[in-house]
Length: 553
Image (tube, rainbow, N blue to C red; front, top):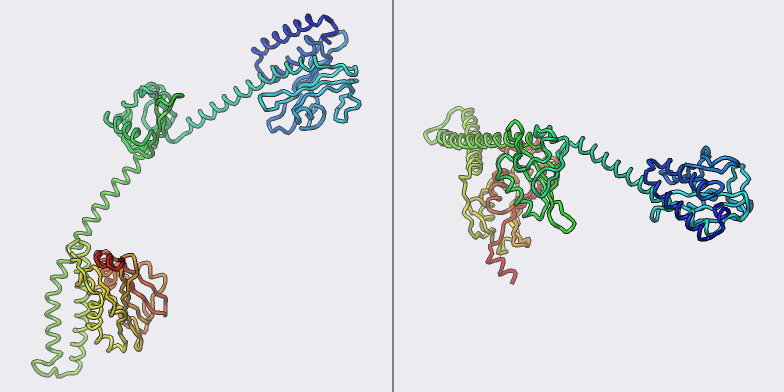
C-alpha cells in the first residue's frame, strides 16, 4: 500500500493530499453515480495503493446494498474494474453491518469475523467505512488485503476522506435528480391543469403561466409571458379593485369574481383565488393565483335570474287574477246563498215537494263551501301580494281563545265533541293582530273538530314557554296525521288523508294561511301528530317587552 512505497511520513502525507485534491477535482466532471463509483474504486487501488476496493450503494427502498463498482490490483497489470456480485441484504455481511450501524470497522483477521461474506478470493483483513450525506447513510466502501492486520488509523482516515467526497457528490446527483423530477412534475401539472395558474412580479408582469391560459384567453404562453396583467382585465379599473380587495383581506383572496378580456376582445367571467408572493424580508414581490372559468355558470345564473323574475311576475299576475276573481265570484255567490236561505226557511210559502228541500240544502252547503274556498283564495292572494297587513298590539290570548271556542261550540256539539280551555286563568298576553290570531285559531279548531270522531275532545291550552314567548296549543283526539305528510302540512293545497269513515274534505289552504299569518306576527307554528293518536298544533308568539321585563324581575 501507499506507505510501503514511501517511508517518509511527511512525503506520504503530501502525496496523499495531492492525490485526494486531484481526486476531488476529477469528481466535478463525473456525470453519473455509476461512473462516480467506478472512478473512485480505481483511484483507491491505483493512486492510494489498496489491494482491492468495492463501492456499495443502498437501493431506493433501503432494503439492500448493490455493488456499483469493484477494482482489484492484479499481479503485473494495472487495477481494473471487475463485474458486480450479488446484492447484499441490508444488515448482512461486513458492509451491511457498517451501513446498519453507521460506524466504520477495521478487521484484522477475516477468518474470525462471522459476518464476512467471502467471494472465494484469499483475503485476510478488511477496512469498511460508511458513505454519508449529512445524517443519511447512502452506502459503504470496503477494501481488503491478503495479509492479516494490514490496515491502521492512517488507512481509515484516507478511506473516510474518499467516502466523504463520494457521499457529497452522490448527494449532489440525487438532489439534482430530485430537483429535475420536481420540475418535470411541476411542468406536467401546469401543462395538464384545467384551471389557470399564474405568477406575476412586483411590476405586474406575468412571469409564469400554465398552458391552460391559452384555451381560456386565446393568447399563447409566449404572448402572455412578460405581458402586463392590466391588459387582460375587461376594464382597467378592475385591476385597481382587485388589488384593493387583495390588500383589504391581508394578502389573500378566494373566489373573487371578475371579467377578463379574451384575445378576440370578448369578455369572460372568471373566479380568482390569489395571494401575495413575499420575499425573504417580507416585502411583496408579486402575486400568484388560480383562475377558474365561470362564464357558463354566470350565464346560467343570469338565465335563472330572468326565469325567477318572469316567475315572480307570473305569480303576481296569478295573485291579482285570484283576488279579482274572488271579489267577482263572491257577489253572485252571496246572492245564491241568500235566496237558498229564503227558500229553505219557506219565508214566502211552503216548498211543496220534499225533494226540493233536499236540493236547497245541498245548494246551501255547497255554496258555503265554495264561499269558504273563495275567502281562503282571497286571503292567500292578499298575503302573497303583500296586501294583507297585520297590526301588532298587546292581546290577552285567553280572551281570544275563549271567544273562538264559543264560536265553534255549536259545531262541536253537533259532532258530539267536547271543547275545553286550559290556562285561561293565567295572564298570557301576546304581541299579535287580533283578527289574524282569531283566524288562525278558528282554522285550527275547525280542523280539530272536523277530524275528531264523535265522543272525542278538543282542548285549547295557554302557557309561557320562556325566552320571551307564550304558546297556544290546540289538541284533539282525532285520527292523527301520518308521519310522511307532516313535512308538507303547511304548504298550500296540502290536504290530510283522513279516515275513510270521515266524509269531510278541506280546501288545503287553511293551514298555509295560518302559517303565513303566524309568521307575519313574528311567531311560529308547528304540528305534532301520530296516526290514530290525535294532533297537537303549537302556536308560539312573543310576549310584549314590558311584560317580559317585569316577569324577569
